[in-house]
Length: 502
Image 1: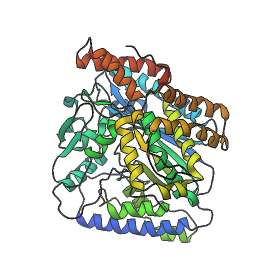
Image 2: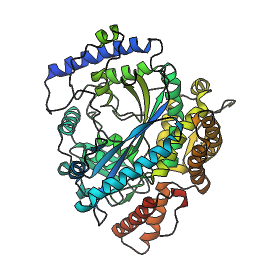
Image 3: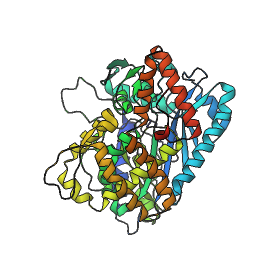
Image 4: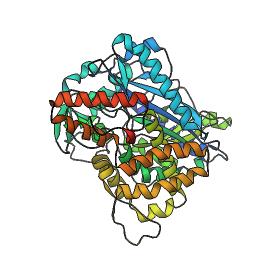
């Protein structure tokens, strides 16, 4: 879920300071790219083609004591894999999985590639006393592990940090309630690096982008709750998905002292049900000031006049410095297409669990797709945003406002009831696609297991840690729980089958 700057094709960051006129030129080019995008979206056949998925998984690196090990650049240099990238903090890495056509067993292929990548990276990490862990927030992370000293020394991260701090004008303030409460300040963006996620890319038909995007927005709270895996920070038990609150606050560049209008936070759920793909790009261009104004030489209009597909590098770079939980992605590859990047799911617990989350979010979105215009007309958008934060805070124990086709009145419904109703519909919707039934039954069986046992990664972590508190100190309890978690994770046993006794 990182605030990594998604640098567009052909652009590289070599500087960390920019002049005011560079921001003005960049903003003008983004506006030109938006005009070009309008023309592209109106081009017959644009963005049609086979549905596909892709994914990114972020990891913590731990040492033999299960504390963070800040060696990401050393591991990356040893592995030499272009799909492996360093993250904002030196104890995080990200692996970019290969795109897969959405037919046959796309998630089985993704799962095998991920397991092989973890094995290979761990072989390089072991001599450096490191090991990868996919988990939303590392339970053994200490406040003393954080600070500007742990940020990866790369120009793009310095540029990002400088820009966000300059806009804010004071330290970032983090306040998260829960069973416990945490209040702290950070003088840089390093707290963002405490979050690791599983980000899914879903290529969808451009002409129906808004319907697909709204369907994903509607079902995300249900998926997030079942996937939750980040119940603690610095020894405090907080939200089931503490990442959601932490990420938003750790890079909130808005000055708290502004008495006049201010732009919304750069991490957000949405500004309403969307009416078009173009609207999502236009809103981020108009609502958020540029922070990294790198320019390309492309004239997008000239490229379109030739009947070709422009890169729209500035628009993509600007979009890559806003972090909605579901993000519209334009890609010039493969004749040009649009994707939905589903960004709220945590890393872990296992490769099988992450793939199950991925298939479920797609299946659930397909299940509501045919009714999406009706459902969005009876459910005001702010209720879906409310559902999202409830799911993040209370996980599978949340109650949400869920629309039904024939509903007379909106009402609170237990999230697990909604999930139980959505699961068979997701299964049926996926059977209409080119995905094998064995894949559908295997992965949705994992989701069913979590619903029936009312167990998520967050609930498991909290249950085990609280059992251990009876006999161990707080630090030892979190470390022992993490040790059990890693033992299960290495076997790729789905979470709902894990033992509930330490």
